[in-house]
Image (cartoon, rainbow, N blue to C red):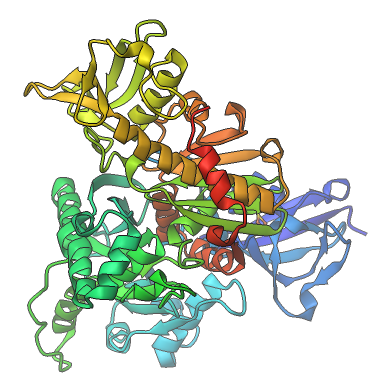
Length: 637
Ligand code: FES
């Protein structure tokens, strides 16, 4: 009997043989493949919870590490999780590793977000080359090409199928040995179509977070996953209403507002952002191939031009919540093109023109409920919390605060109307985080004299969310601000305290135009309402799960403020009641992070759909003690 076993591994571009001594065969396949320089996508940390590490057992046996069950390739090829299976001592096994199960990227930290899961390289739009000469059955090239790809991609029986584009047959019939083709995810299927561009033309995708107040777009190189550029702007809908309920009500009262809101976000906000990304990066619009959008449910309705009115009245039923694929030009995200010329089989050149004029697909990510949207699901995925064993919490601070708790196999979520204060909107000197924004404020413990930090080393123009959180925390410690959020009488004669009609403001800085940058008592009241809404949501969700804050292993704090939030200030102002600094991890814009991972790994998109389906919604307005908790949290005691 052989004293060793062998793994014969077929990977996309190589075949390797791994020899294993019998006494070492207890190691998992993921470990053997990692040592052979074929690391798999183990995004759930090898706990058997994701589909990242699936490989095909073609022949021979494997053994399941947990149960000892022997899986035999003689029963027919089967898909197995590499992290759950080991070689059988003394027996050879043949494995097929699909390209999409190979690890492409480990967790990543970039300027605006952190991703805590690994991912494969399997973008929603990809250029592939097919050696036609190698196709087994050349009598029907289209079927043979699709079959080759299906086999290459094979994962699960319910895998999204590959279907040919009508132009494909003519293209494959050309007498060329190697053909560049495009594989494009269309939601229900992948479409395989000819590539009109030169084989090495760069192609780009865009990940977008459509927030109620701010929209951020990120240009990504689809062949490498490299982030090339980022741009952001205020959501053009903001002047039609500063929160989702106002916008929903407007649509309810005047149906024509749906079209206006769609125009405001698509034509007036996202389109200029795409133009900016393209222009600044020196590429062309034609190089944009696909777009992925995350956002709350109302925002995605309005992007799609769908009436969100049902979200405003019980039972709050969304018109759609599932993943949707639309066309960029029909949404007015890109300028229209001239009509393509006739396509009457006059040749590939004509067909190429048509293809170039085609619309990039726009993927709207799946959400869970009316008030727990794709932005929250994107955060659950990108933080990796869906795969963690210990209880953890995602708190996304935005105009619509979203909170998700992972406890065992359960995912519980709630949403709370925080308003736009933490994004600097609606406040006397509030600005978005960007050049010139005061991002940090320290107050002298005795004199309350401020010391400021400004983004981009520019003259200050206003205060952004992180600056306000600092001000409240420091103001409370120095005694400048009392427990109710009013300036304390002890500082009534402070030279920076400006008395206005019915409230007072504290002048932080003078702008170059002579105007003061002030924080008023009414600003503090808006901020306290926002913090109370989020804090009460956290308290109620934990109570529902019968968990205490100290039992939560990690609290992922997400929001457009990126990594600039001072955790001490967050804790001192009571945004995260009962939590300690070591439990908190800043993850930045987790909605944008999720859109980026979905753009680059179609397997992640499928897992987002599953997460969305199993997330249980807790309606805070039906929680008996929400109101009293909210009132308690309004104070700075
Ligand atoms: S790493 Fe194997 S199932 Fe997730």
